[in-house]
Length: 405
Image 1 (cartoon, rainbow, N blue to C red):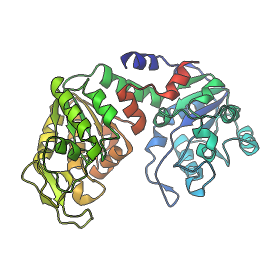
Image 2: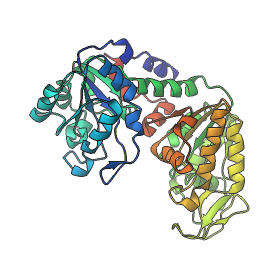
Image 3: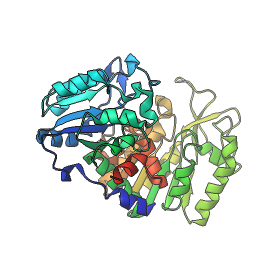
Image 4: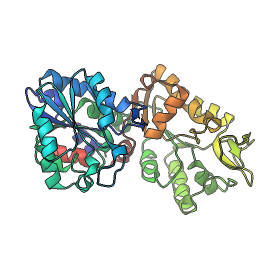
C-alpha cells in the first residue's frame, strides 16, 4: 500500500498546470442530498470552490460534470442537477449555464455559448449507461468540452467510469485541491500516523467492512467496533446477543479478526453495555443492559452509557483517529446518544491536537445530528467508499488513469 500511496501523491496538481484562457473540464462530486428540489447539505459543493475559483481567476471556461443518485442510464427528473445551479452561482460568484445533457449537440451548444470566466454545469452523467461502463466513445464526447481535465471528485475515484477513468485517455489532467487534501490526510494517517492510532469502525454490516478491518489491524494500536456489526463480533465470542443483528455467515471471519488483533497486540474494544428495545420503532421503550450480553427477545440499537465513557476516554487519549460508521441507529433520536458522544469526543480530541479523520456519508450525518461543525474535525472525507478503499490499500481507478498520463 505504501508505494501505491506515494505514487498517488506524485500526480500533477491543478495549481502547477497554470491554466489560462482554456476550456477546463472538471469532474466534481455533487451527489448532494435534495429535498423537494432544495439542497439540504452543500458541503460537497463548497469543498470544490478553491479549485473552481482558481480556474475562474485564470479566465478559463469551467465545465463541471457530476452525477446525482442512481438513475438507470436514462433521464429521471428527480436526479437532475438543475436545482444546483442557483447555489453554484452564489458560491462561485459568476454566471452558471446549465446544459440539459452532458454530451451531444445540446451540451456542445451551451458550452460554446458560455464566456471565459463562466461556468457550465452539465446534466447528470448517469443519464447515460455508458458512464458506468467506462465507455471510451462516451468519454471522448465528454472530452470535447475541454482542453484539460481536472479530477476533483474524490468520492468517485474508486469507480472506473467514463468521467473518471476513460476520460484520461483523451485529455491531459491534474488533481484539484480537494483530492489533494483527501489524499494527504489519508496518506498521513495510514502511512505515518502519530501514535496512539485509533480506528472506530461502525455501521450495520461486517461484510461491508471486512477488508478495511483486516487492513487496519496491521496499522492501528486500538480498534473500536460499534454499530450493528458489533453483534456479530460479540456472537463470535459466545456472548448472547438476543435478537440483535447477526451475520451468521460472518461469525468465523469475526473470530479471525479478533485472533489477528490479539496476535498483532492490537487492543480491540467492543460495546460493554447496550441500549436495547423489543422492537425498532421511534417511540420504543429503551432499556440499558448491565453487561455485554443482550437478553433474549431484545435488540441492541446503540452502545450503552458505560461504553460511551469507555470509547470517549480512548478517543481523547489517541493522537490519530479514523472513524467510519455510526455506533448505533442514530437516525432515531432515542438511539443516537452513542454516536453523538463519539462525535463530541472526536471534536474534543481535535482541540487537544489529535489528527481526526472522518469518512462516509452516514458518519458525516452524525456530525450534523450532534451539532458538531466540520471544522472541529481535522478532515471530513467527502468519499466514504473511496476513503475505505484507500485505507484497504486498493488502487483507485480514477487516480491510476490520471497517473498514466
